[in-house]
Image (tube, rainbow, N blue to C red):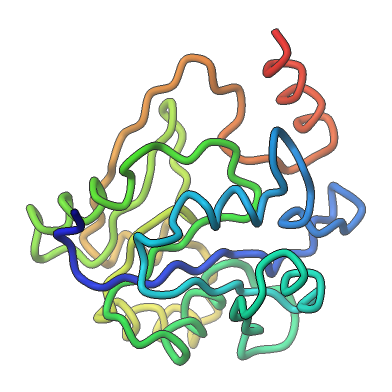
Length: 201
């Protein structure tokens, strides 16, 4: 039973993946399942709707999940996840958005419930993000709509750091400990290789 407010899911897949020769990480199979299908199945039925923030491969997304919704950043260039988060609010109707990076390796069970519970306990906070094995994963976060003004301010000032932006939103953290997890996200072929080897061990 869901006892949290209506929430949209936005998969952040708008990066260049320069250290992986520009491959679309959302369409890769790093473990048992293609990333898009892994993320979709983890949250299908738990969120109001699911979006992909991406500038390419819409047809391939639709082949995997018909009627999946997509949007591009509202500014040209690759300015990082903050611009994708800002753009999302012009598409999503819900007052909460769960953002998740496309290269996430492990999605903790009941994470959306835990994130909402944390914000409920801290009503002055507008964002809560994951800290996995002591490492902050800012793009995996739950944002309130009232964060938009702060996002706009930082982007107007050409400040693209999620950490700096979130520091102005009274951030909260959900700590995740997983001793078997080598990487929480994958940013190079070397990391992919190490991660896949850890699955076989």
